[in-house]
Image 1 (cartoon, rainbow, N blue to C red):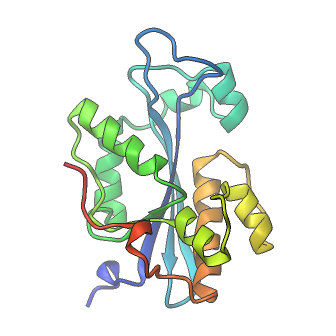
Image 2: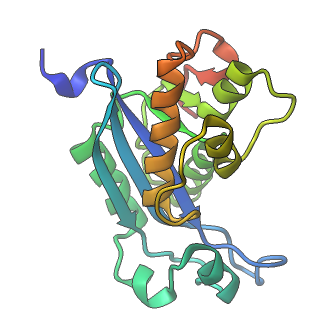
Length: 200
């Protein structure tokens, strides 16, 4: 069987979106400006591929607050792909429709759902999504769900790269997935952390 379709390969996804210190300007909405993706081979215990995809927003611009947070500027994201093209790339090159995928929390899944519905772009992912934050919280018996940076501290892992850059965050989250796998906490056994149906 082609390893592309094997269950041991997982896409770890993290997105960055346009944001503001306060309310969005009139008519503006939060849009994805970067899709970070790391492919994890659970059997080998390795991160085997890494990608950062810049996405050009259509209904908002990159604020000074957003640049300070992510390091991304309007000039940089203007050179990115359109959202529809980015979603097609996820499907074509990273098998997003068939491969299980993971994010830290549910924000990324909800952002894709909202933006796909608003723009009429087909949702690129398949039915098997796991909230790694929920799995980590359960594995460590924590009362509150930690942010990614705090989870790395708890796990004794360094934060590699820049926090709030999609490519770097996906890489770090993938490291936490492998850490959980080493603790026999992955794949998750509770359905509360795993979504088994794609959005309508």
